[in-house]
Length: 241
Ligand code: ATP
Image (cartoon, rainbow, N blue to C red):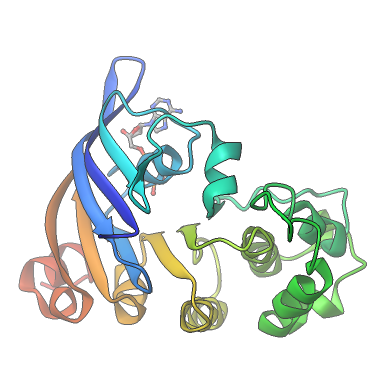
């Protein structure tokens, strides 16, 4: 059984159907990426999994249990947390306080309040820059640092599945490399990752499998290394003739 099963979901903004019967799976331990151009429906798909949008049809199962249409705080509680596009950190809170906020939705139970310090230490190990900046306000960080903070905050919920929406957006190439390396590290430490990216090349290099979205539909899916050499993908998303 896959950790996440998305089956034929339809998602609307008013009358506009942004996601038109999308199906895919994420197995425990994988990095899966959804790639595609502007407006393909990537963010909408992520927001539907995290409970920000409700699907009009289809099913979403996490660890076998239906979660489609559940409120997002319950979904976080089950073990899915999202680092949203545009980061959405708290600008008037320090880095440290932002990270503490990430424990808010942590799975209920006996360890809910425990281990916060260890988790913050783990985030600081993954992102030494955040440790240097721990007393600074979120709003004073650079774009790359805010991206790190959003990812770190999502990790504080101890997710089984981490949703990353465009982690490379607006970052300089060197930083993109760092962020992608950290995604691999997070995955190697045991967290399953679903990542949406416009940077198809970077995303496919680190993912195990990928799905290509176009105008709200999945048009192609394969192992990431096969998608990387697929002529259609190379032409449409990797800038080759
Ligand atoms: P991008 O990388 O540009 O964010 P995307 O693949 O994530 O693209 P979505 O943001 O999911 O695409 O958008 C899918 C479709 O839904 C687009 O046609 C978009 O115009 C539309 N859409 C997205 N958000 C809204 C909204 N809040 N209200 C109305 N339409 C929306």
